[in-house]
Image 1 (cartoon, rainbow, N blue to C red):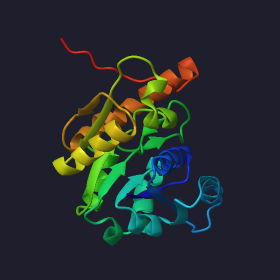
Image 2: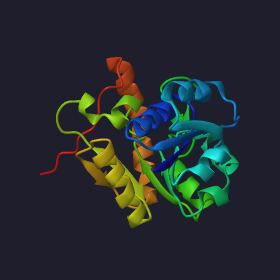
Image 3: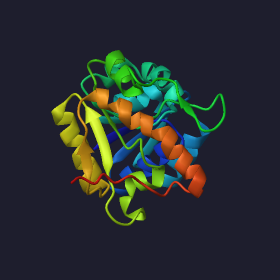
Image 4: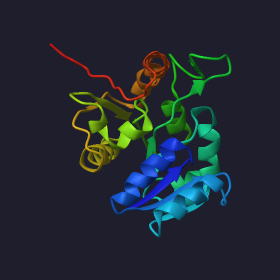
Length: 216
């Protein structure tokens, strides 16, 4: 499968590496077609990897991952282009974290809206699925790093898109517990977990943990 990755940070490189290791072709996109981080990653990953602009990666991918910083996500996706994203599963991994007032971060959008919803409204012909935003990058692709039972959440409006994403999460990454929390409005709660997640990560000095929902 051809995978487009928007963003060259730790999350984008971690996901891209996993996909290449699984035998998929990955194009990593950024604002510049010659981004140094993307170029270094390509040099390490070999001929199944390539780089380009956001638009190049969006056009290339049969499935596209938004791994950009949440505060810049909409600008990056507009640079990727509506036509390049139309009809495709667009997996939003980002969080609208605002560190401008220090730590812990606040959310630039919350309560009555979410970044996931903003993306779906801005790109109505794309099938936006929010997931992977509540765990750190290594855990995204290797849930066994945290022992025992723990959960991953996803939300979105399109059931077929969510079935595709569930397959990726379970069959490719090894997630056992994937909870579909509803339509894209459920991204509000998923994103609101992040300030609490950040506080726990600071308290424990690690991001290697996750949440588990226990029901009676």
